Structures are given as C-alpha cells and as structure tokens.
Picture 1 (spheres, rainbow, N blue to C red):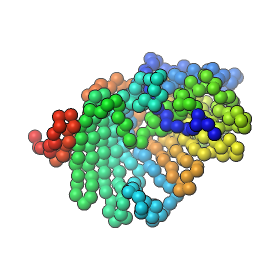
Picture 2 (cartoon, rainbow, N blue to C red):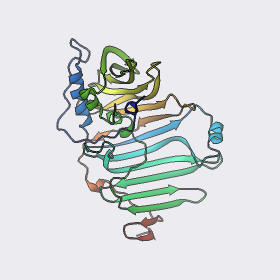
Picture 3 (cartoon, rainbow, N blue to C red):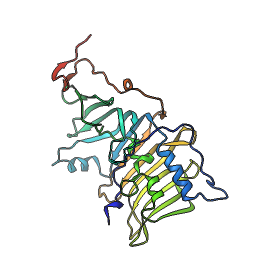
Picture 4 (tube, one colour):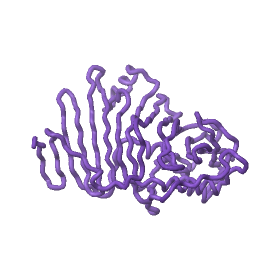
Amino acid sequence: MSCKYNFCSCIIGLFLIMGPLPRATAATGEQPITIEQLTDTIEQMESAIADISLEYEWLTDSTMTLGEKFEFIADKNWSIIVGPRTCKMVCSLALPDPNDPDAPLFDRFLFEKSDISMRDPNKPVHNLIKRCFNGQIRKDLYIGGSPHTVRDGRISKPDGVPHSWIPNPVEYFSILRCRAIEKMPLSEALRKVIVPVRINHALKKVGDFNTIGAEFIDESTNNPFKQVCFSVDHDFTPVKFEDLNVYTGEPTFTVKITSLQEVAPGLWFPKSGLIKDHRDPHKWANLYQATGPIIVNQGLTNEDFDIDFPVGTKVSDKIQGREYVVKQK
C-alpha cells in the first residue's frame, strides 16, 4: 500500500479565530450535512485554539503481567513505568507553515511529568521532569534517581523549536492528530478529495457518542483504508480515527475519544481517550484522562513558559558556558 495511506505523525499549526464555531446544520434532523459543510466545520476546529493548558494522567499499559514486562525488557536498556504518569501542560500553538507539514505543533511550551519507573522489581524510582521553551531559551529539569536524589538542570538555545517528548492529548487525541493522507490536515484532505471519500450518514454508536463517518477509499479495492467518526451531538467533533485493513475491514490502529469537554461555545476538546495498535502482539495501549479544567485562548506570554530550578540543582548553562549549583538565597 502506498505510504500516503499511513496514519503518520499529526502536527498542524493553529491560529486564533474570533467567536464560537458555527454549528453545522442537520446534526440529527431533516437535512444530512454535506461534505462541504463538514469540511468547513472541521477547518474552523483546526484553527480555533491559540493556547491551551490542562492537567492530565497518561497510562501506557499492556496485557502482560508485571513479571512478563520485566522479562520483556531484560535485554533492553528500558524501564517499566508503574501506574499513570501525572502531567501538566501549558502550550502556545504555532502558526501553520504551508511549506513544512512536519513543523512543530507548539511554538512555546511548559510541560511537567512525574512517574515511577523500575528496572528492578525492588527498586522503584520516582521521577519528575519539567521542560519549557519560551520561543528562544529552553530549560530542562530532572529530579529523581536511585539510590540518591538527583537534581539536574540544563539551559540551552536550540536551533528552531525543540520537541518536548512528553505525550500529550493535543498531539495524540485532538483533531490535530489526524493527518488523513499525504500529511494533510483532515479538512484539506476532505476538500481536495485526492482519494475518494464517502460520508456515511447512518448514525453509529462510538461509545456514548452518536456519530456519522467519513471513509477514505483505497481505489484498488474500493474499500476504506481510514475512517473518521464525528459526534453529531458535539458540533461534529471527531471522536474516532481509525486505520483499516482494506481486505478484511478490521482496524489496525485506533484513536478513540471517550469523553469531551466544551472549552468554548461550540468547541470541544477530548477529556479522555485511548490509543491502540491492533497489530501489537503485546497489546500495548495508551490511555489519557484530563484531571482538571481544560482552558484555551488565555493570551499567554513568554513569561508563562519558564521553570525555576530548586535549591541543590546542578545546572549546565550551555548559553553562558558554565555549570553551577543553585544555592539558598
């Protein structure tokens, strides 16, 4: 199958639009929504958030027992994360770059992640990682380690926008996750119709959502290779992205939103969801759950994207070319 059908990494820049999204007509009523109306609605969703902040938990797990997991990593330089990661994020969304579809999604960010990891069943390690970028300067802080507490900090000035490497719902669960074909945003793929698209207006339950679907068709088999389900009760917000085997129709990769929060009039953001690769023999899955309010479009400034190094942190300042330990003031 051509690489254009891959469910690839999904990064798209956003710009702020004023006012609520218009509600598409005929969610459940007289006139089915047209593909043009659906595309217009999706396009506005893709550009409706300028910045976002939330707290959440992220769990990566599989059907393996704890003993099987340790056996699995025995010959690898890996650790097992025990329980969910507790995370915070404050991010500013980048303007889209039409010449670079792989450009970073965030132009400024502040992430915090805490978890418990183990390489030995009897030696749990508590970790806290903070990473921020204010548009010019990046700071990293790691607190943890075993048996002694480690506090390491780093200040640098990267070329371009760095990646946070911390899983988050904006990149993995929101509409920004879906690159339908050839690294296109979902609205662009629907509008350009590079491959045939079928809209299925028959209501289908996806969890608690009533949905209609868009199917992207493989022309050699006339079967869908991808489907996206839109909740008709939530302004046609996508609640499932799924790759399909064109011969069997079975899902190969699924991103499923299980609950939504209205963050602005007519604008919804995933509050919980799961990611599953059905081809994985170990049945690994990622589960996300927001644990507090989801706040958007606050008008954040560079001062909102900074971290303070606590006393005792050994800091490596790559900009000034020096190392020091933070002292008590």
